[in-house]
Image (cartoon, rainbow, N blue to C red; front, side, top):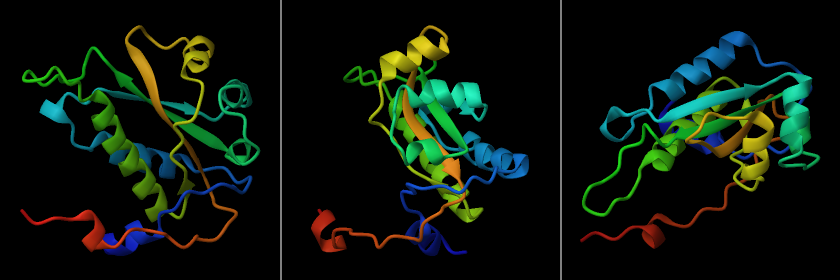
Length: 168
């Protein structure tokens, strides 16, 4: 599949079949994330895979939406602040940017495998930190539900190229 076709097929899935994701697909998707670029190759990410009933129930306390609860697994994408690169000129940390690139690799790899995802940022990060006891300096950036879509591709509403580009 060419890249433009792949990105046009990726959409935010908000209803999943109760069909497990194979270990082979999960490993492929996580390897795609592992290969994402990062500032100064720091790779300041860690991915927690929630697929047990116990871990999913904990996670649902942090983002409780009926559609989210249909996903058979969720990846918690975290930044390790001690590993992120910080730009010297302005002190801007790039860990969240790096994790975001890796998360998009997850979303696109899942699409390639016929799986669906949705990028979720509207969650209670403090509650996740408490319930999952992440290491010091680690923080959740995004939740990525992962599974087989129980919906069809929705039409994308995107700005025209001329609205988002300027040649200078």
